Image (cartoon, rainbow, N blue to C red; front, top):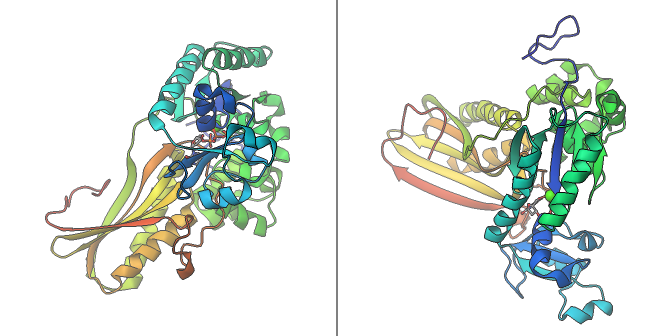
Length: 415
Ligand code: TTP
Ligand code: CA
């Protein structure tokens, strides 16, 4: 960490734009692009890839849609039913000419992973270091491979190689920070190429919608807008302490990123499976006490997830009744998010089942992790409402219960 010097009130975070060149590469409509490699007749046509979908069926959720299908309002994390309402299934290859329709295909991870490996191998050739953050996204450090004068030329060469050798298009963004490189790669999608040299970074961020600032998901963006904060420029007019009061640690991160301050270096990803924490309490059924402990755990776990740039799809609690009765409850969402407020809603909802339970230990865990990827475009997260049953946005619950010794010494994980 670089010391603050005389610039500020924020210990532990440097208030300067780092001297490095970071690219973020992100393949366009990745699963659909993979399918087009083996179904070339689908190039230029609407394609929808469904998770939990089977040919000819209506269940499942949209994993991705080609840009042609997105024009009809089909997008990731929608239910297949909703997508079918917007864009019916093509019956034959020729029927597209008459009415708009899309080809629906199920997810084939094994194949997409092999295409992903091919893309990553090319990126590796250009990288002093590489951080793979999801199946189709990586950061690379090219500080010693280019200067800001020829960074765009290098990015163009990289994009051409991916297109010619793998057959998919990637959008590439370059900036002095990881967070700005990610914004840049998303800025002109698909097939984008956007470079933000250090002297242009703050100007670039000024009008950036607040939901595009690193660490801001849909729920946080909503809260910020209610505070009158619409852009990163608006964030900068606020005192960091006000944001910290509202959002805790994350408020400070949002403030830093809105200024273009981000000192992270591109380092390879560690391979965590979950982030969790648990705490003991004097055996009690008092919901106030249980809630208070759980709230603190939510704060710790979500702060760690944000620091590590991790998205999670499953959110769970653990309750241990004396002497060794361990129950866990989990809810899986249709797509990965980083939303502390949502974690809070879900864990309190899951805790409702344990109103009468005397607990001597409680835990919170997020799992099903993905690293640094974009948040799902989900806005309808009404996890409490009864009539959500059957709504794919609500997610699915898992329950476990076992009696036995419960790794009393572990503070970092639960099973
Ligand atoms: P993204 O990079 O978020 O999306 P994309 O590549 O389809 O589209 P683009 O980058 O052009 O906007 O995600 C990569 C893959 O991850 C995507 O092809 C399918 C999968 N995915 C899901 O399964 N569920 C989701 O909610 C999202 C957002 C992605
Ligand atoms: Ca992508």
